[in-house]
Image 1 (cartoon, one colour):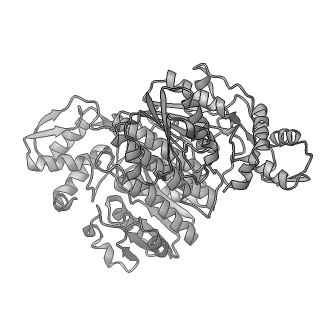
Image 2 (cartoon, chains in turn yellow, orange; image 1 turned 90 degrees about the horizontal axis):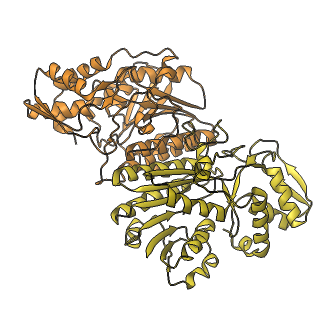
Image 3 (cartoon, rainbow over the protein chains, first blue to last red; image 1 turned 90 degrees about the vertical axis):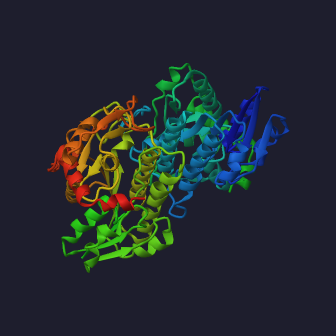
Length: 320
Length: 320
């Protein structure tokens, strides 16, 4: 048996990952979530598995973590504050939920002599780089959001612990992820707005922001492949599709799938909020060279997401 | 009057900076230090100035900071845990003293509407980059120490706050700094060892590590110049001399100045400790293009440091 930790196990990517891991009966999964944004409903079936154990704990409690991490082989650390938008209201959320939590995860690993960590980072870490498509070794980035700042802090901590304690780190810099159990991001927001008023849609920014997206199962495939094939001390991979779309394209697909035709109201800015990056497109040669290829295009991913939301409108009711 | 905050005002660089600032009678300086490594003795004369006010506070206390930062124009944030060596004993020191403290400083600035921060970062932030001499826009670095990890976290926070709150940031990536009030680093360690036993000297690593150093007054000159001449939102500068030396060279200058001839005992590793970077040499074209040139060579800086230590052996007695 291989024993995995999955932090953020009740979240969008985390819960999908847990299900994939449990497809192999030789895998045992210990999931941790504080349910601040995760959903018990995502784990309904998962909880029936004898190979799954759930801890409803907060990762800020290091003492508990040290206990929970006992006898674990490998840690998927997916828990995070994933809101990239800049807020003056809660300036410490990224520091606490991302940076400090990651330090705790690493200390609990070091304490229990666990040697492998897989981490969900972000393409936002490149800030507003001029090099597009952006490779993993892009020029030294300048952060434009507290979210990106916390993720580069986490990456630094992981690399330093790997150097200091002979661990192995897998760092995946995602574009935005789409698919089943998606509960956060522009498709969610547009769907929600259109549910309330299908005649008009207000869009943050001028709609020309160019973004890249990836389907959640493709994302998980890529992580598994990299774990199998890449054996460096620090393994860093961009994960995204080899394309991008404009926010306007995405709105069209969403509206077509929902069969609505709202009046679109854009603002004049080239970005939707402070720190919004008007163009995200990652160079994914490093992972595709290992033999990975996403199965869904961005358009297919958006449509799949809308179909999921249609069948699961409960997510709008409970979203915090 | 211009009112400055200097954090770490009783430290090596901080106390020298305060004295330089107070040379201008139009400057008012509010110094903060928790004296964990700083020395009251460094401020003996400074305290006599009517334009200086000292707060003996810990920067982890945000509430106090918000009060102290009232009516300030500009913040020099120099306070830090500056020990680059990897320790298992205190895995949270860099996180707390560097990352979290910097978040607090930025929040206190935002709260008081202060728009300019000057920050002491480090060449260690480049990890073991292959690009040497290393420019500010070197490829995306991989951290090899918790110290470097915390400094890249701080840089990210500063950039994000500048983006979010229309602040201006000056980030200086130093090589090791030498000169009067130096109380930390290899010259200090070697001097101390030779004071105890002038017949032999144990060296961490094989002595072939190539390092770069800069004299403290040259460092301060560079910061003042950049503040005057560079007006971007984020201004990042490497600070170092246009040369490097081997640890062996440095040992020779130290021994000559102390008139000792110890047997040298090296270890076989090409680095002195986990995370020690065997070759640090920064490209300083960006700052020299503004018209700055260091007045002292590395050798002159080392000798100046030894002369200072000879006249101030008290620093060995009180060093924590």
